[in-house]
Length: 275
Image (tube, rainbow, N blue to C red; front, side, top):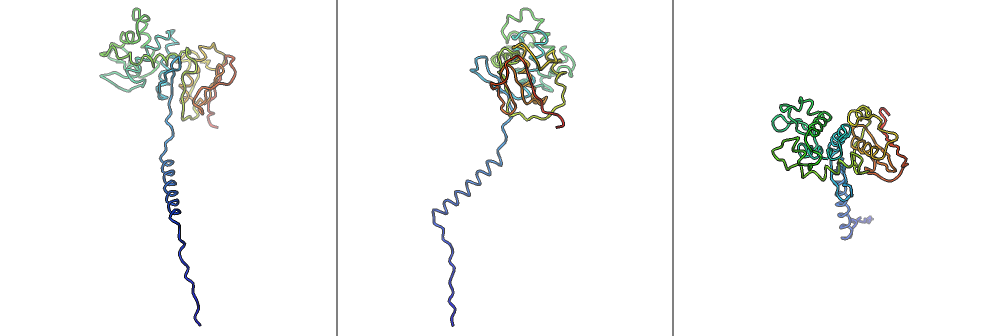
């Protein structure tokens, strides 16, 4: 007796089903490629003009160097105009980077030359010493306070391009306003990669700003100067939160936002070491 057999046919997929399947595979592959190659946003800082109409981008290193220059200027009793002159000079000479070399024997933030009496190589590449030297020579120039930024800078630097400092004036003025406390909440840093730091915050503040009393009660202008200095040094000291004058900056948001007491007390939080 013959045994009947049934052939099991292949399942036929409709043409539209094949299209959907191909699209799904392509989409999944594209998503995987994007996610696997996406890089985290680069850390950065932003400074705003006094009227908040203009904004300039800085690297965290540039912001930290600017904070050192401004802090030394304030400690030396120099006015905001002097800080603007110094920052414009450092922008032009080194892009606010502490360079290890330059033209001839120039080095450091201001490209000062040991052979021209600016100090040893170690001194001109020390941001604090270099800033002190710049302000000392600026103060010695007759009528410097009545001069434009580029004129005052040229008296100190004796550059072959005397008009070059003018191009940095607007950005330098905005940065000086933030770091001297004239413009509250004007400096922010975002997407920072923080780690706990055992660095001596009080000693550094004393060396740069002339005070180790960073947190606590402060007059409004001084408080904002300190708050901006802390933002610029957040990576250096593992600072993830700063609050002053009813505003709070956090590393998580990368911005100043309303909230907190406006009682003149500056508070900060550092990532705990060894936690």
